[in-house]
Image 1 (cartoon, helix red, strand yellow):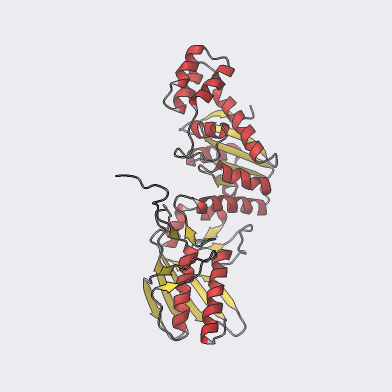
Image 2 (cartoon, helix red, strand yellow; image 1 turned 60 degrees about the vertical axis):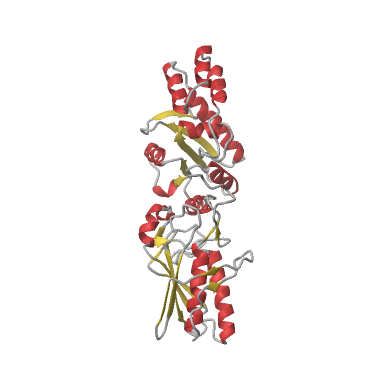
Length: 361
């Protein structure tokens, strides 16, 4: 099957956009009209998408509507999740209040853009829903004292596949979105979670964070430094997302942990370590071995190698500290990106979690 190109990939909608559309439909029904289906909303950048309702329900003191989230061609954990909005009239003068329904989390740690104890509904979705309440209440001549409860079906289970737990969001997912649109494979939510992880760590006065490329390196680095979960950043391939944010929001110390191939790409200057967006330069590795005094035969074997791990094995058999050198080079690149705002060291682990290289000797 032919892979789709970037231009062919289908964009989708954020949970915040879906929650806003469901809220608009439910509020229209609460004020006595029919549920609009489809329901059209205005996104922060002016687009006006229409959403089909999945369910609608009206009682004596509430109205409820739901929308099935379409994340387009992005591998979003919430793709096809049901986003539910239940609206009620609030007490006079109470204004607009947001509540977490089933599947939406509650904030329990400082450092997030939402206060502790509040529903994990981010500022932009709150603003979008507030604008909808103002619009619809004005249209019907009703007060804008409204209680909005947002839920996500099966959200608590879905949240297990996100970083919400270590961010201190318990009980479910966050309602996210800054533009209302999901760009395929932009991984915007992952990078945003990294940033929020740094925010939470800073708010809790943590002085040492570890950013890891995968679960094996994360487990290993946490054991070496006895770090709490709040200090662990699931960096994945997004080294740039960590380092550029730390430049403006520094912590005293950062350890970068990962496998030899990904750390090699960082040492070569790549900020996105995904195999589809950067690759190991074997000529560069050959140069590093040459600098360590490797024989010409080993240098030639490195140039013709199939994998980075094969090169590491070649260096190990020759008792050359290639992984240490690569870790040092990666530290130099990372420190330059962070502009010296953070003290950085780099650890390299093999696939079993054994330490094979480090920048601090």
